[in-house]
Length: 111
Length: 114
Image (cartoon, rainbow over all chains, first blue to last red; front, side, top):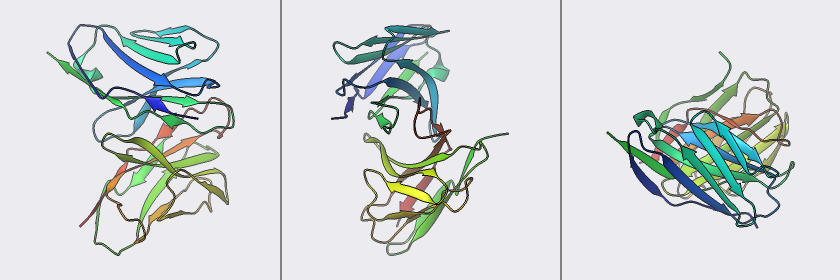
């Protein structure tokens, strides 16, 4: 079945790297996503990765996918206060499937 | 500017009243979605529409209704049958409901039942 799990809270110091983790249970997931939600706003797609990839890098963001363990991570280098938000991972098992979101993790960046 | 507009941003309702949340997009997207967000619960899908004049129930459709008479519009009615309607409601759209599935979200509507 479809289920996405994330821990709830992470606090980091400005300038450090942040690593946000996610596990999923549907081994057929074709697409995996990271969305960001700033306070009181909607979600914004940060990046996504296809299941045939192990890693994807986009400026300060690095996504790692371990299909064997069904583990997805998002690394944010040089974390800034503007990165403070809720981060959701999501999976899409197939082209005709709907997105399933995790519960989200709140990232707090302290000066 | 292209995007998704939700209104109102904040809404208060008395118990027993129906309320309709507006969602309009000018992205020419075929698919539109309504999600409900509660603290610590993530996003749960209420209804979605793949094309005009068609829509399907999501995971938590009870107590809600939708219509899709125009491509640009997908209003959500929260009926008095919804037992716990206080939540943050998010509308989203995508080119289609198949493919990569990238969703574009509105800014949300916060409904409080008094």
